[in-house]
Length: 306
Image 1 (cartoon, rainbow, N blue to C red):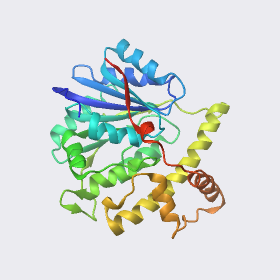
Image 2 (cartoon, rainbow, N blue to C red):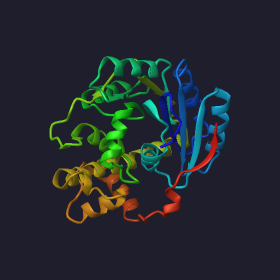
Image 3 (cartoon, rainbow, N blue to C red):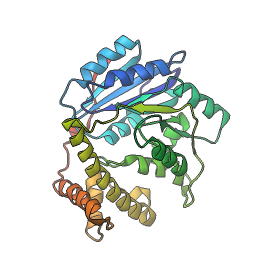
Image 4 (cartoon, rainbow, N blue to C red):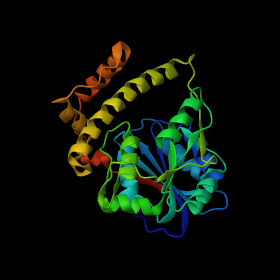
C-alpha cells in the first residue's frame, strides 16, 4: 500500500480508451472532493488512445493530487485488485469510479455523512441520475444492494478483503456481482448464506453518464458489444455461483475465462430464448479463444505522480 497518509478519500478511476471523457470524470471528482483531502489513482487499462496523457493533464488542471498508471491488459478488475492490495493510499474512505461516470458534487460528502451515521454500513452504492433506463437501474440498485459504476467503501472493508486474500478473477465482466458477494456473504469467520446488511445508500451518492446515441454508428457498435459482454456476465454469474456455494471463495481461479471454461465442461448456460442465446453464443466464441495473458501485461506501470 502507498505510504501517503492523512487522506479523507483515496479514489480509484478505471478507464479504457476514454480520452474524450476522462477529463469530465476527473473534474467531477475534484468538485465532489472540495474541502476534503483526496488523492486519485487513475488506471488506464488496455488503451490505444491518449487517455493516460489526458488524465495527467486533467489532474494538474483540476488541482487534484494523484497517480496515473498504465496497464497493458484491458481488465478493470485486475487494476482494482492491484489498487486494493498494493497501491491504495492510506485513507479513511475509498471511492471507485468508472471513467464513463461523472459523480455528483455532493456525493463524497453524502457518503461520508452516511458512513458516520450508519456504523454498520461498509459500502455505499451510488445510483444513476440520468439515462433512458434510470428508473429501472435505481430500482435494481436499491433492491439488490448492488454496486456499479461508482461506489464508496470504508477502509476497514478493504483491510478485511486483503486479510482474506480476496481478488476478483482477472478478465471478468461482471466482477461487481462477485465483489458484492465477498462483501455481504463472507467475514473472517466464514461464508454466510444469508446476505449481511453491509451495503447502504444515500440520495446524495449519484452519478451521471453520457448516453449512447442511436444515430451514431460508433455508439451502435458500443451497444452491441455491451450486449455481448452482458451475456458473458450472465454466464459468469452461473459459473462463480456454482463454485463458491460448493467449494467456497478460495476455490475461485485467478482468471475469469478459466473459471467459465472449467464450468462449461459439465454445465451449459441457461436457455434465454433465441435472442439471448445468440449473444451468449457470441460471448462463448470469444471465451473459447482465450489465452493466458503475460504477467508483465498485468502489472501497473506508474507514468505520472502529481
